[in-house]
Length: 431
Image 1: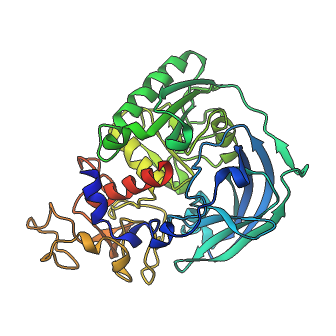
Image 2 (image 1 turned 90 degrees about the vertical axis):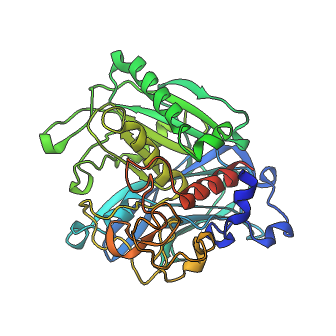
Image 3 (image 1 turned 45 degrees about the vertical axis):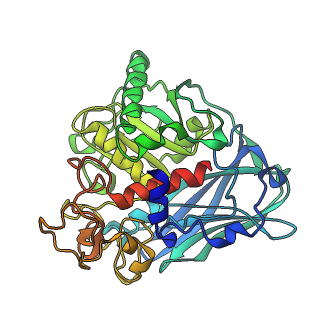
């Protein structure tokens, strides 16, 4: 079944398996990197119409959990990308895409009136020789705006040795070598000393729940999952709407961008410090609360409530954002965003389209007589189509299914397009 589905994917949908892969020489991990990590902490600062990038610190961390193949290939996802070139030959030897909380903030009303800065972090394999490093922003659909660029010698004293924090590590799922698996680390937030057993119980429950949903169910043997117990001074999480403030190690809070259920943290350094206790591809922060909420940002982190209403569905939904770059398909809920998508540009999210360049999306998955756009009638509700509404916008954005896990908690699974995007991400990271 899996091999048959692969044949149905339009190659530009994720842009990784071009014919050039069959002929060009692959970058060999051991030629350029060692199995440790270089963490780049940087600030993004600005407003809705301008941004700047500033280096904050460089840290050498003990584990590299990312891919050791397809190093110079990109899935063309994210609002930003990092490019690493060999300092001598200038050959591209590593690249990856990511998004940030800062770029989301730039679409809010507040960003029109004040300037803010957000700390961000990205991890790359630790280089053996000098490198040229660039962080590039996607402008009008293309990675053209270089925000930060510098040359780095791996022997430089500007790189600090990471001091690992204290945390209890348990492996919840072990399927083999890190280079052949997706490594997911789940971090405890807001669990006091006497609640550590509760954290591991809830982390295990939600991790197991992830694999009850397709397509994660068919990819379970490609995952390693770690849980890191972190003792919190206080129990729970900040809830500004109810004037609740709790001292926690990762500084998570509801009311992000004044949206009551949007649960995030701007303390990216603390999150990354605790994640560095294990090799990881993805970070999930599990928050000790039964208040409904969560958040997920591509290659940044996922976060959600540990229990309460639809906790398993929310856990999976937010991971869809962070892991495969899937966009929200709902459009009626209130948000702080103003025109989150530019409808004159094809969005990079694999499950959203403006029809500007629909050939790059899921057009080949449509049945012959499915109209574009697709009416939300009973005739098409169970088919892959092009339904208007998505990405927090009622008009101008289209989604592939009438209902999907990226739209509502009531959807049984991901739609066909989202499922294939998750499959391709797993394959890209593990094969």
